[in-house]
Length: 308
Ligand SMILES: [Zn+2]
Image 1: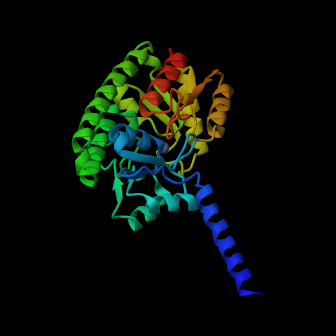
Image 2: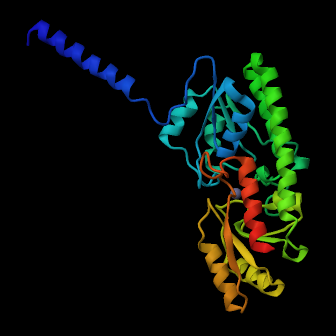
């Protein structure tokens, strides 16, 4: 092969490689605008929060979309790439993303545990000393998570501090308004029907904030066992107290709730499936339930319609 031909082939090959790199941006890469802080969050709920506080000064990518269960989530190779590219990783923590803990330790210089609030504010999970991580159902606590994220963003991007703080005040005002709206929607449910039964125990903070008794087939972690004895106990309670509805969750299999409905019917009480609640994941982006405020309002409407 002549030298000229070799040079030509080499040039063509590199040219194609370069074209390949430019023309195929990975769908999973973080949106990159110059000067913006690149933030990767685990849950969609945190992505929503970081976007509200960070505004135009940041770009956000969330690893977990609609219907994804954070308790069981395992990072994909594209996630690892995004986490490597990030300036800041915002994860929920307090035990939520159980299978990603090692990654946050490896990335400890840029990983921030957003939900690590004062333990006295948190409920305990399943009668243990571990915190219950489902704090997006207490909108006051969620506002405190937003405060922590504001401080962290300000530390990483000091020039943006006043913007982040203004965005925080606006977000907290919206959270407060949403809390009143949820309270108003739930007002129509009579005290005796204020029992919320779901597949896994994600609604204890909801129960504390709005005065509901919370029952679930599985514990706070979907990795825990769903026992037949728990289904029998719940079927007895539903039958005795004539509870009208039980609920499935968008990020959890509906199998156990179906089994509970059957067990209750076998006892002579017709309990209905009251609808689908957003427990550990939001709805589709752009839809009503595609934000933390939206998922709380949507759940309240579903619960009120089924139990009043
Ligand atoms: Zn959960």
